[in-house]
Image (tube, rainbow, N blue to C red; front, side, top):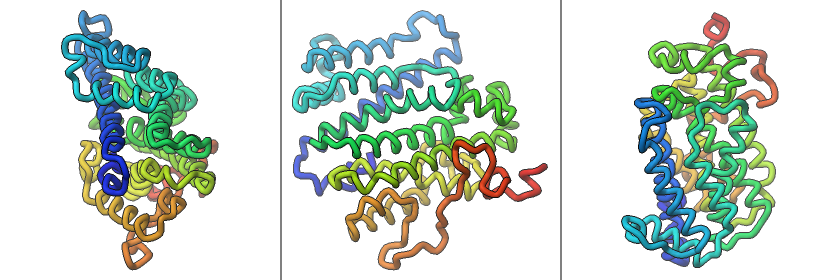
Length: 337
């Protein structure tokens, strides 16, 4: 929702802005329903009676709206503010049903652990990629390059948030979004991750996080390579790249400790707020989406940053660091100990 806060005054239609804001609220509601299901599974097991009632409510309600493109009647459905705005948006913009169905299914799907990065991409391509495609339709942007850029940004956002920043939240419930092959390569498993006191200090866990963030870096580099062909009108969505770009440097600086500055508590720390301010100021000054998606965030009016350095990661297809070491900011003794 970064772009709504920073860009609402620049957009011609308040109705469109509200519709897209409620799309984000719908996404949050679907995610919350999935987290509730995971908590029930962790406490009572997967076969608990009534465990899926909340998921069924959102699944059935959104499915009726998607298929009929109008608001279904029924208790707690026709009066729900998020569903009402979702119904208005689907009817007004004739949103593609495939995108909406795929987004809802992916966001409500409970996954114990993805087998590999390909399976994780399939989840994020729907939960984030289809979501961004729907927002592009609402903005009136029909462009393959924009869809391609947002696909890579969606993967980067999903990996950063679910696989890395929230790894402790998943582990407490007996789940993880770190792919099984990455865990195997780094000699870790869910049993270790659930032991948070040990896992948060384990160098192999941090190496696994480093491997995932290397994929994030690769995805952002792909997005930067094709951003020049993307229409400038998509700039509000491009701002979602602030999240992965900031944490690429943040995690490297803090030795892949996701709890530094309470970052994993979903609190917008001072560093991220300052980073967003610098990026928005850069956009207002240059109106260049190439600079908008770049990781660097120069200080306003100075044109450079005193402390921030662009992150350095390995290529995701290679399992060794750029200089043959593990996580870039780990000391040689620590990495080899």
